[in-house]
Image (cartoon, rainbow, N blue to C red; front, side, top):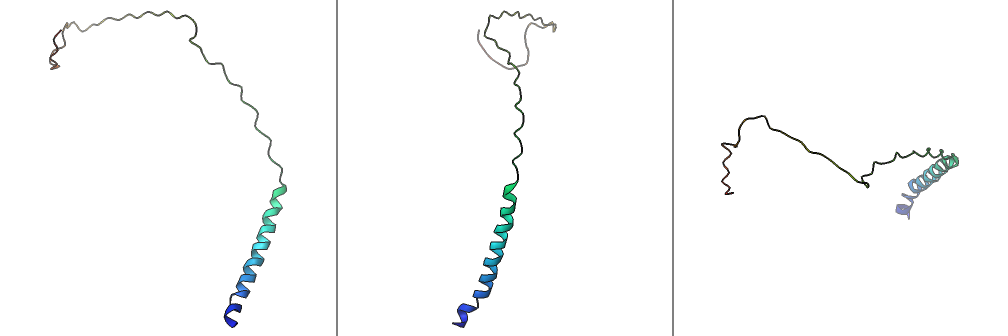
Length: 76
């Protein structure tokens, strides 16, 4: 019977500390909840739903008509 009592005192101390720790944790439950942040107004997104017209213009200034030295062999 002595072997079983060897663990009784540490078990009683552990249960007592556990009970006191639970009580201390429960003391913080009453705190008020912070207010919700104000909603953020969303900006309207640009829409491409309507008609659209565009122009593309370009010009090259290199003076070479062919690209030499590339090494591609394509029959056109």
